[in-house]
Length: 144
Image (cartoon, rainbow, N blue to C red):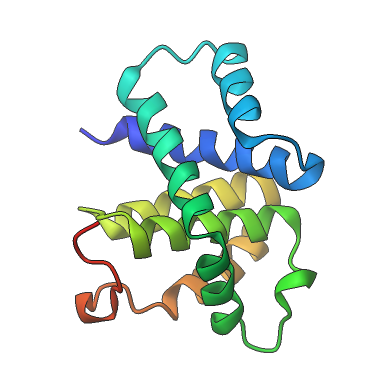
């Protein structure tokens, strides 16, 4: 069951969103978030940390991939919500072996709708759809 991944995706979004606004230490923000939200489920905590760790290991490449998939839009003009949803979605779809990519995409669209509304969710869907992630030959790190 991947319900813990759904929750971890939203957790990771809230942590990276806070980091993007404040610019503080990501590990400290993560641990504070886990403590404040009393997240006891070990797999959920591990997946939250994995998403963030993987993004920061590949941040430059992920941000470049996002920028390359934006049409008529500049990466620096993205709102905090949209930028950080895309960061996590691209990280997970490109660098973490995702068993159910459509579920991951659905989770990110729901998170976007929850925090930004339906119109930004459509924008996010359009950008993610350009990845053509269901074609595994486009995945640069199949065995990560």
